[in-house]
Length: 262
Image (cartoon, rainbow, N blue to C red; front, top):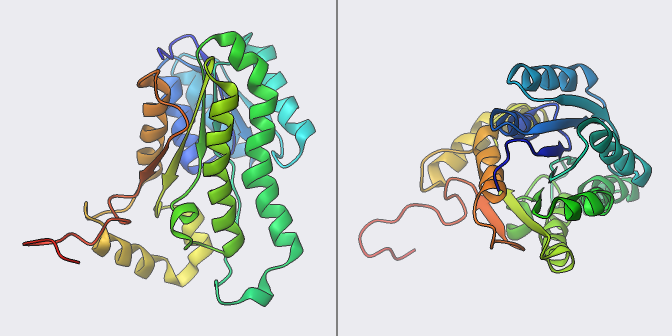
């Protein structure tokens, strides 16, 4: 897809991967709606950066766990831009709970994590569907995680939610084709604020451990994930229902020497 003159919604776009994706879209000439739940000032700053790149951009409040908010986010984008061609379901949440601590996981954890990470993806896709179909070459990219493949991550509910996103991507691709393509990216360890807050003092050691295992010798930055998202949007029009792991080769690591026996 040629994105110049197109319009996109990026959820959870006030920082991190969402911010990087919104700005990459803007650099390509795509108008962008920057969704946020609580970080209004940061979202407004991202929208201002996008406008400085010569496109239209707005910051739109909304909790994707609420269907009414998802519909309002999409409606605001269509009202502002007159169209919607791209949806990036990036909004996500978790609570850091050791996997062995089963009694620490509450009903509220399940409801909150699945509400944002799974229901949010479905509800935004449902709200955007008629506009993406009208585009004729609509694209949805969902942000999953290697946690949804490996079963290791910030918490068991988080891992389960990201596995659900991968499955939901396949289901939506079957339903929305041929007018809309649906794919997902599955990031590994992303250096930055989110994991710094979640891991606290363990952040640097955790980052270093993954860098030692990664075949490419480094972990991801938000821009690396944004580039992968863009590859699904601007790349082949015959790719749908797929999940791309972006982790520096951590899942296939460590690097082998000689005959390559692990």
